[in-house]
Length: 225
Image 1: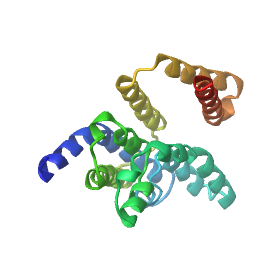
Image 2: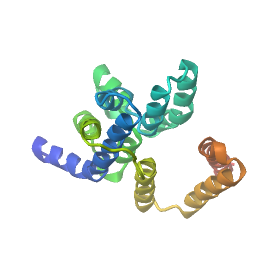
Image 3: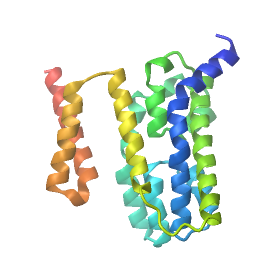
Image 4: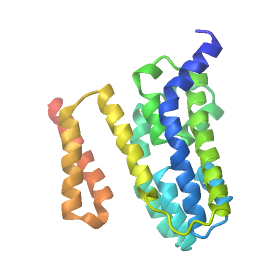
């Protein structure tokens, strides 16, 4: 496939997720300004942290001057899932140490979802990096626009921004299910989430992740028993 056609194909597959970055990144920028930080912190968070849900949490932590230990523990808990992403993300198809480092650094939930999709199976270094650079660039640009808009507009109250990230993950989950329908896995995930919400609502995310990981491990061992 010629390079230009290959690039267009990569961007076409990346676009549905990338376009969702625009309102979500803008929401991050608005949230940064709303928390009392300067607008330029929005692109800094987006470019340096680049971890979606962690960035939204980091805005509150930075605005409240949270201790470094709290920031470190929060980062570990929220982003520990990326360790498992690396097990199946096609990093072995990325050649060169600088390219591998950048690909690892920008391994977000969305990049993982696109990188392991059927349409990305033939991708090599250039295509994978193009996908990740496009997502990274969109995120930073959208956050910058949101920060500038937040500093220019007299916004006193932001409603609904806390659900923006949840909505994106719901869309990614639906898209993943459509690509690989698995009712049992989807049902187990929903059961873990509901159980965690009922039993430990204050720590729902951590409890649900832990329970789901345990269920998957048991299921995997049962399959190979």
